[in-house]
Image (cartoon, rainbow, N blue to C red; front, top):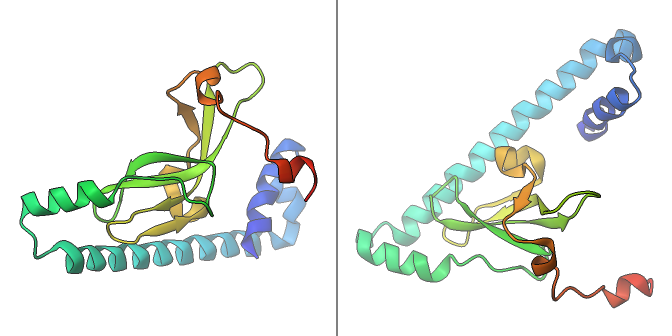
Length: 167
């Protein structure tokens, strides 16, 4: 229910409408619902982090630091998921500190000379932490440029036949 409320901020700003005028008597309710959603999201996130840390300790706590390093180097190579997205960037896991994958889409805005990465999910194979959406990703959700020229990044790109054939 709060997603439309959050999106209304963007729309009101774009339309240059004062939120206090728009919400009127419902302004306080609007603010309370947003605050409640943020609190619930933070609790859900902390729950996921605690669970992931426990899984990590259970899986790798018995290993020596050197053994753990070798095992984690083997299993934490971020790879594109066939169900998740078109691009994976390396990121450190906020729960266990291992190498993990930030999953998202790429695009080029008119006039840009770089590819922009827009993350929407995170996955860590070491502790099984999965995060989805801006609320859970927090600072990881920030869009940013990919360190690769546009021509090189899209060199092997082909359009999805199913998309352009409307299948």
